[in-house]
Length: 313
Image 1: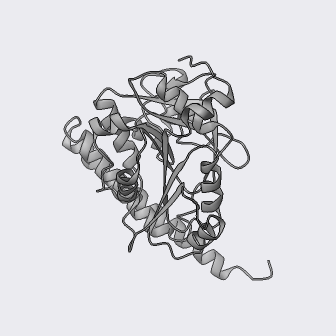
Image 2: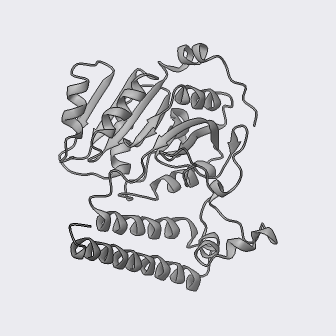
């Protein structure tokens, strides 16, 4: 998919007034201010939905932008979850394009305008995602991916993706970041909820975020529904965004792990239980909760090690 770039000046003028940025915050710390500052350089409407944060992220943000008409903060009395927060922001937004952005993501210069240019290049494109990178500049997993069907998840879990060199269709790895970075925008099955620029017209057709997910897998759910409605999803490799992944979840790893695996179970039951044998879906459910149990054990051992580790080390 070739989408020629315009000059940075033309892109900025064309899109700055057409994009609402929605940031759902939960204890993101100083990164929230950095995130908002970078966003305000590329758009004129930023909406922060705060899920009852208990840290200094909101006070720091308000101190940095005490009376900015382009920034709107919505404080929730309790943590409603990521999907619900996105929907609240969606109801507050006014522009035809909406960027859902994690508070630990920092837009690089002109990345948002480049994403908008690609979105506007084809009326059948419903959402685009940029090039998520780690702080060291390496590509982050999840920014471009295929849908993890039960079979693909099985292949990944048991390392069978190594056989893809012989049977690429059968043992396909849904982690597309393992493949060479494309030179131009390319259609994919899914992108990350940390960075989604979405056409409002497509949202009106597909529906809003599924609030039955509290945290994790709601982005895969949305991508599935976009594909079911024949909207294209495009990954833009020349729109880099730095993602300090996990900033908002480090303080509550067990809580996050529980909702992640609960979301996985809902995703597989919602989209695949009628396509696969009941026995296989039962095995998928068992594997999800087994994975959760292993995750809990790992976190517990890590905590024990930290407590027992001599302080002088």
